[in-house]
Length: 185
Image 1 (cartoon, helix red, strand yellow):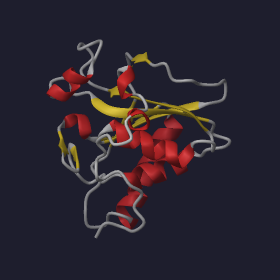
Image 2: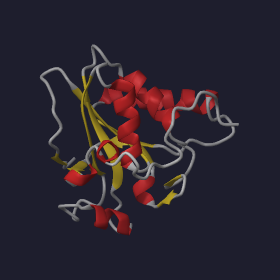
Image 3: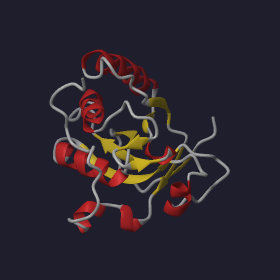
Image 4: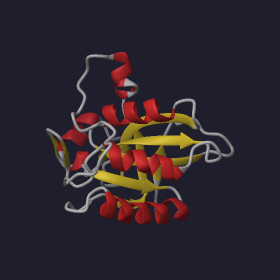
């Protein structure tokens, strides 16, 4: 497997990385920071993942064109002794609607698909297992369409996208980015 990872994500010798896509990356970043800052989250970046390998040097306009198959995603560096991957997946499956194909709220296109892009086999196995659990308990009448595959390509998004909602408090937030407290019926 060829992979291209161009990330400025801060890591440690014991940290792990997981890449998640759940719609517009601004809101996804905000939810994860709110949930896990000071609780084992080392760093988080927004960027573009697992698109057409030959595109290279991906930027926002290219991704929004729909011609690159890249997904807007967040990449988290976390300390597994403080923050469990199970807790990250729990927030992931509850903070967006994983039953909509290539969309979240009003945002439409392949760049808004739901995806878990794993860094190792343990993350992969657990993602499949928890996807099945959430299918039964949270989305019993709606098929979860979340893609689970290894991270192959990652590019950090442009600087103005990093911490966008912190820098622009009134900026656009997708209405689907909130922690659900009850199953979708």
